[in-house]
Amino acid sequence: MGLCTRPVKYIHFEEISSTHIYAMANGAFLSDFTVITADHQSDGRGRLGRKWISSAGDSLLASVLLKPSITLQEASLLTPVLSVAICEYLDEFDLACSIRWPNDVMVGERKIAGILSEASYSDKLEFVVASFGLNVRQKEGALALIDRPATSIYSEKGRLLDPKSLCSPMISHFASLYFDFLKSGADSFFNRWEKRMSMIGREVSIDTGKERIDGKVLKFYKNGSIEVRDLGGVSHRFHAGEILRVGPRGRV
Image 1 (cartoon, rainbow, N blue to C red):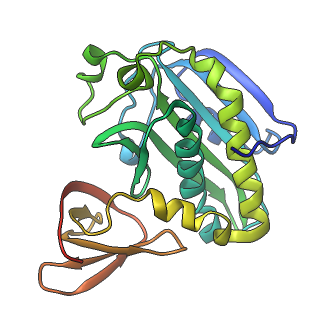
Image 2: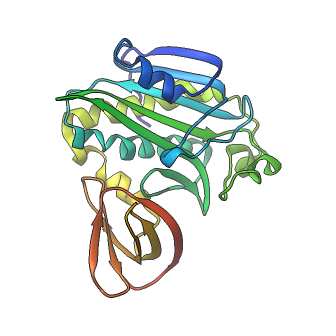
């Protein structure tokens, strides 16, 4: 696993409304590659305004403030970069992780981590906040309270770890992939990202915000988009959306 020796600034809170909200509100004043962490979030958020449910000390909760000299379109690839970093870090715990487009890290059919990336820009990109929550200590009772199938390192391996102990090596590995991405673009991570995708050939339902498409996943592209062939045989490419359902594999 790659490690990065570049300096990282950490800001830690015992409790905060949301590390992501804090980073977005203070991004203009924070230095590049500042990591905001918390033991507990009273208003933790995922994509589409969903609430991140976790008791104090059960999850690794972090937001990374980044100020890269890239385009807004390139910044959208930081979600795939971070998802690969999380999967590869969890390999250390012998967890067979996959990625469910666009932003969930899965163990089997259960979610172990989620990602939320957001950019601030005017005429150019000002900064990006890449946030993630990783389930570490949750037991089955706590996981059952989550509205979608979820798991944790403890649930999978029976190891009751301190989330704080995971932060530095996880961030270090992400930093290694991030700086490779700034140097080489999507070529630096695409094959590793594509290999982790569990959805090729599977039936899915995608909500684009305007319509719902049912079909089969054909492939993924270096710009982070997904291609789906609908039930009428027409192919569609999506750059954003929500996977509502993942079904069995079929012929592509």
